[in-house]
Image 1 (cartoon, rainbow over the protein chains, first blue to last red):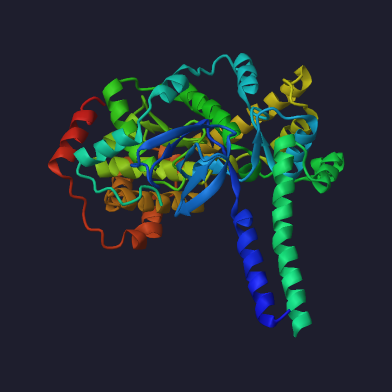
Image 2: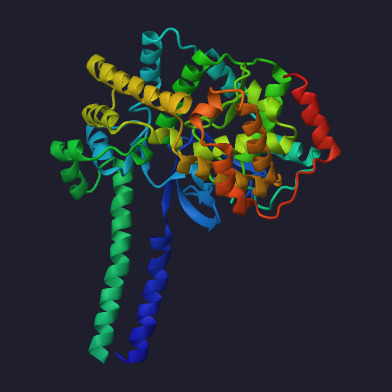
Length: 163
Length: 301
């Protein structure tokens, strides 16, 4: 084998294997997220993702990540704060629970401080009223409404939204 | 040389392919729920589970942070009644959401939501996960929308830096770990639930006491102020409004010992910490449309 041939084979092998290395996966760590057509909150919504959904990272731009599923049927941009490198198990077995507790590799959805614990907390602290917390959560401002608000107030929106 | 090249090729391929192999194994683990043998071995050691040091910043998931924030918020509202006028709350939510979108953490498990507290005390709280409370007294200090943006951006700064979670005592983590390791994908049993709820109550108490009574350390307030400047610049509000707000609060706080006066460093100290960052932004000039809508909203306070 000549030196030239060896180098060519090495480069080819690296080129073949590298895409696999780049196939990083991330999980949705918020209750529900919107995928957008562009890396910005002003991008149109092209899909909705749910807590625990796991995707392949296809591209990054600043703090925005383009994710897609295995069949590329779902693809779009989402801010990195909506994603985690941890696997999020919606239904965890005992082994997974132990791994989650020891390694931090996994996050167990609905475990730890959860709705059951909140219900127990409420029953023990009847003087703590959650009704306005529930009402607060129902006040939802969409990115489009926020953008219109800024425009109406002549506030200059920086390009790309979040950093 | 030929041999060296072959070795280089073999080592490189092994390294690259090795990464791929790990990826494949990890993927398989993800599908089957089986984790690597090393991790499984690690996981099976109860001693190691127990010995891991609790780090609220890393070990509390956004979902758990959401539940903590809800209970902290409900606890705050035990002391401060909500101010329920709809239009002014909607205005504060529009402004707050516009600012949160430009933060480093625009996405939280349950999103950002804002509520006015019906008190003349000058105060504001940013509970974990993005529930933000601002008092009527603090709103009255604001002369323009940029000053209100400064207040809300400061609280968003506390949220994105998870300052509330820093107040949690390490001892609370024991219950979280032991119950997480003990449970097996089923609903908690009575004993586990009771243990977790006790830890949860302690956690809520730690955070609420810090927010309402003792306040955050000066360096955390400076961090929130610094982040507020960044957020305001990204959106297009004038960060000089933070200085204006602090000067106004200083004026008002001379007559008050509660609220911000109790939980925040001296406004002059905060101004000194951030003055360089504000730099030559110049005075706040509110366009007519912005000032008019601000005045309309504040007429409801």
